[in-house]
Image 1 (cartoon, each protein chain N blue to C red):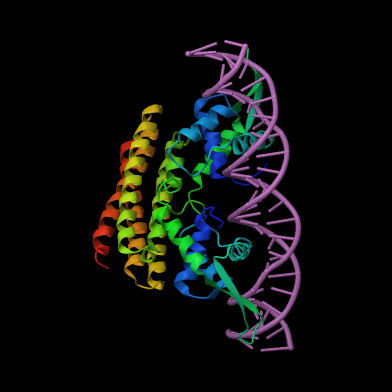
Image 2: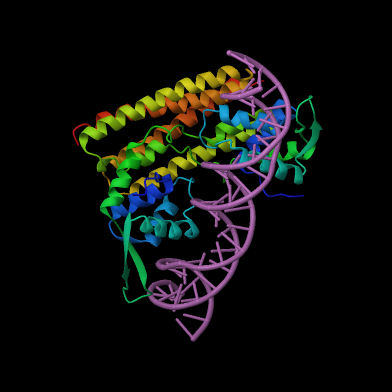
Length: 177
Length: 177
DNA sequence: TAAGGCATGTAAGACGTTACATGATTAC
DNA sequence: GTAATCATGTAACGTCTTACATGCCTTA
């Protein structure tokens, strides 16, 4: 009945619950922490309340689990939750627009740096992108090898390669300005 | 003295002030509204307080301007502001990591959609990306044609093209799964 | 048995969004 | 002259982050 669309964080968490099966908030949190994406911090203060909200909305149910340790709550996705996930998924229109690159924003103001610092900037940026590549590969190795996961990783790799090529081209083009 | 780093929104606003020269909050706001990036809404409730914060920190100064109309405040960047902008710019390391694509997140869960809906998803996503292309071009046409602006737009175009090619490849690869 | 990390949260604060309010200008 | 839009904000609300608190478990 609550038809306000899921945020991307909510949807991602719900998606983890869906694909992992019943699991604790901590498990979901770790998915975010392990992810090479810096979009979400995966902080406890975000994840725990988020799961409570999803439960209030009827998208997950929780059950106490005690494995001899401290009691915890395991969350499982409901039918409504699956439906909400599909709705979010389908909605490619208004919300989904652009791949934001923090380097692009910085490029706009690169004229503020003296030439030497500019060279250093390009070096740093390139190193940063290359280290991302390693993180993507490491992350991919830990995920289930479904075709969809593979394609998602492909997206990350392709975008990263595009960034790298852009950076090289920009460096050449701006050389001597 | 306040060495907490600028957020990307703060830096972008400060950058606009820097490149536009003294201007009102509204003018800056419009830059965000016109931008094809959906990362920031450019809402008044974000921009006006943000400029107050920047002024408190000594990165901009404001002066009353009345052009016969209602009084407004024009903001100009200070020397400290320029320095802060350069520092933010140089700091490519920890903060700047990844180009997030909302389509990638969705790809992970695409298995939840039945084949027909999946085809529609690819169509929608492709249309969305293509419409972005138009927005990027339109935006670029309104900006000053400095080499740096040009390279920033190049980044947007290249990433978008990479997304498009990825989408086509993924569609083919997933065809029949 | 003490130290350190893992697991489960909570509390306070900062920031951005949506919605509202209002004065000035322009269009018709 | 009135409606629409531009311009300048403010207020309430929700969400994310940082920091804290605490119990359990391993390991040295």
